[in-house]
Image 1 (spheres, rainbow, N blue to C red):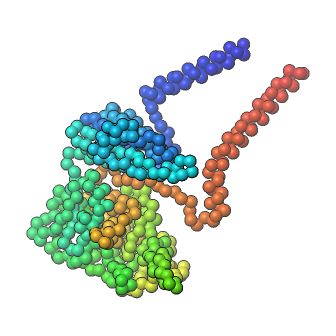
Image 2 (image 1 turned 120 degrees about the vertical axis):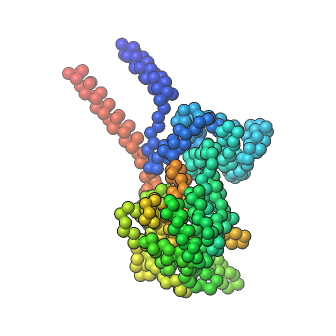
Image 3 (image 1 turned 90 degrees about the vertical axis):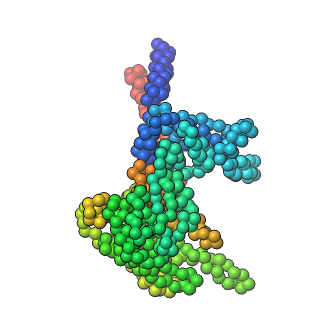
Length: 507
């Protein structure tokens, strides 16, 4: 009797598993408990997949026998492709190839534009370098696009969706970078240009005194101008906004010079033009206790030692608004920034403060001397949450047309520079400017994906070492403890039930 009951239960369980397997194959779904919904396709991606009118073939070139952390990247990429294939109604098909398997496959990957990367592999207590391929080729009709390297931990959904969007779009939206007032060229903004060129046709533009700014430009970028604007040029900007154009202004109202250790104001006429619209970029330096550092050469005996010194004129911003421009950002360095305030009272115009300083901040006049070696105290930072950037949307010019305007109190945060002055920017600095261009020029929502999947969540610095250790070990010991506790309680309950059954039988 007991044996037949056990067989029946086993048969029932197997039947249920078979039914679940069949149903999951037909109606697959996934529960995503991550805080940023890392494994859930965004509305932007779903809209792009829905708009596909012909198939997209994804050939992923991934090496086998990779370290576990790199193998996880391949697994995540494959999971994402499974989801794309499922939600596109069959318009996304994919295959994986290992270039290390055959020489022909390696040549195929190289010719497609996928270059190998060298990764460190530990073998028998030795670290060796191994060649690996982690890229993909996307084809749609006669068009081909390449993702040369799938960065572990990077925003894979953005890479895939933006590439598919690039394949499917017939004509890229146009974006202009203003020239003629000492602004950096496109070559001086290589990181921003590289990202924007995926979805936009970006080019330099010089304002004409006689012709209006073409409204074919989805947005006009004014980055770090140094020279004055003429009255006619400011009039062209007004006309562009009035026609529904969108404008990004990253303005240096003050300038710091490390050679002379002095600061000075910068006047271009844009500050007055902005103030007439209710936005003021003050000619003051922002100082923040939460800041970047500069390298100082110090002489000690016969040696010269380079020492990093925190410099409050390089505020490190971590307080962002919940807005598409700043979504997913963690920290942005704004060198020699100025406060951005607004006095817009029109209820039909929406103003959002995008970024603020920390709770320990201050301002300094434009004409100031930088004492790099000064020891700052909490009394030097009596101010809090000073605004550094705003996003404005609505009837800005009063003629009824809706336009958008983004103003940053710093013009250099996304500029690489050229030649010897070239500097690599941290990703969030680039994302801040690119997200702003997306918000001004694109309504697909792809900008929200750019920082998806790359969030770092370190333990807060202000916690003491004991609390950090408690959190660290609690994260992996607590689940084990709960499982053991569950097993112990279950065993006790079964033992008690067995004793009760034996007592009843004995009586």
